[in-house]
Amino acid sequence: MTTSATEPLIRLNGVRKVYRSGAREFVAVSDVTMDVHEGDMVSLVGPSGCGKSTLLKILAGLHDADDGLVQIGNASSAFTPGRDVGMVFQQALLLKWRTILQNVMLPAQILGLPRREAEARARELLAMVGLSGFETKYPYELSGGMQQRAAIARALVHDPKLILMDEPFGALDALTREKMNLEMLRIWGESRKTIIFVTHSIQEAVFLGSQCAVLTSGPARMADHFAIDLPYPRRLDMKTTEAFGTYTKRIYALLGM
Ligand SMILES: Nc1ncnc2c1ncn2[C@@H]1O[C@H](COP(=O)(O)OP(=O)(O)OP(=O)(O)O)[C@@H](O)[C@H]1O
Image 1 (cartoon, rainbow, N blue to C red):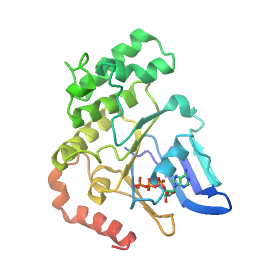
Image 2: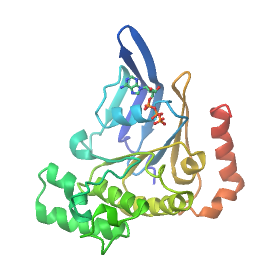
Image 3: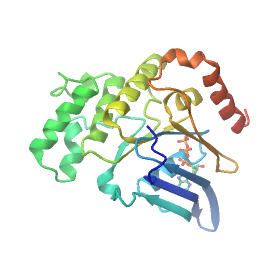
Image 4: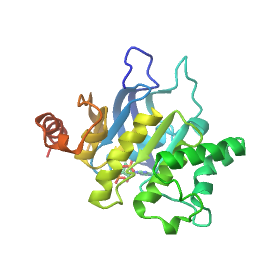
């Protein structure tokens, strides 16, 4: 889905973020240079504390970088972080007193989008994530995987240009996680969104990503960024192929493992 001939949606060059506490400085992210094109699925992989969430916060406009270029949007696609970002976290973070439909509609409501259209879109998205029939249920009536599907629908409801996902399947059991990986690829294919996806799992990074950025800690920096040229649709049995193994070995080597 990469359209490298076009201007990138995101251009990062030499991005660096330092947290300061009194006189002490801590470099959380450095040397982050990559272009992300519309429709890319970028895996950000690295060990705990290597700055993945910090980078997502910079992309979401929640943190400023201390150095380097962060350009989001281009001549044909203006970008407003509040309007154009959808986020999914490790926990679904659904409001327990709202139904699933009301939860999915929340970002549209916050942005003041017309209610009727928002509801129609929320219903369509719930169908897309396989939750038709659960509109009037409450979060406690859904499994963890189903709650995470609702969170994905919620992230898409205001039709954002960029979806940022921070370890969205980290709290799920291994089998549900594999199923959600397949679902995620289907949803990405149908929505054609640009997705940046944080994971600790090297396998997940290779299985999902059209691009992969590897971040290391000590020192915090982007060690590499490359395309994953495995065909879509991806199937679970691809994990046993030599090409898949070559990518995972490359990431293990970059992480010094
Ligand atoms: N607000 C903050 N002030 C000071 N240090 C921070 C702050 N936020 C994060 N850090 C530090 O910056 C480093 C990077 O944090 P970040 O949360 O971006 O890493 P991460 O790769 O997402 O980690 P994890 O995979 O464990 O979630 C960590 O060492 C963390 O302790």
